[in-house]
Length: 346
Image (spheres, one colour):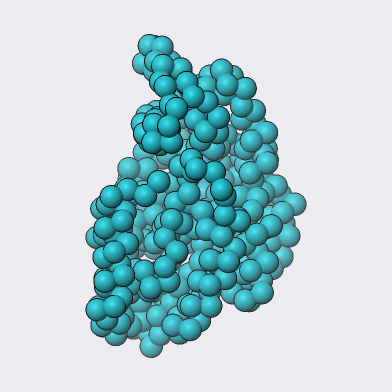
């Protein structure tokens, strides 16, 4: 459900486009580029309650996006080439790198046919517990419970709490509250809390997580394509800032080791799980380098600048909000004029 701030942001992006601010900024910042972050790609869903809609685009929108990037004369490049351009002096053309987080099943069923048709490179970041069938997509389970029920009870801080959620608005409010609470918990407590909620409301968390995720067969199919880069997103996709440093480093190193063993190739690139300001800290950038990664991508908005001005282990990315369908807004965002708006609207 779009927020008031989100509507204002969309209007501001349209205004920037029509005022030609995007083009002015683009001419002033040539040689730089943008990494775009997507999550799910699947046909539009009809349900009224879609709390994760911001992380979804349709195959048609992906197709339109790629056509527009080519029309706007962006170079669409791999993550390896991003690393090269980031340490090179100014280049004549701007670039975009397409990345996909979460290794969702619909990447190979809905996105890959579009990407292959256009012959463009892209990167997928894999949390390795999920293709093994061991990951817990707690955010999907939370959304399913709230979508199905009109009353929800759970234990929070040793107290039994009950919520009535008959309207869509009430469901969005509860999802936002519980999502924030779960994100604040250490991984063992988060796992216990979501498993308790799933038991109460008969949600099969392991099956839900497996069905939503690619398996190693899917990833092996992608890995043989020279246009596909397989990166790591840890093992269990935890919020790294909730872990001790030694555990965060283990998540990084083990995620890389598992992916390399399964795919028989070097895994050089990493994405911080969730990637927003609250989910990782400055020391994690040093850890990602220690774990052997050539780059580490966040979900903090910004431009990749040349000549070594961007930290390769704290790369900014534009996390595209799937509730926006305007290519004019995308052009304004890619110009770099509106990153402050993106930060304030999330």
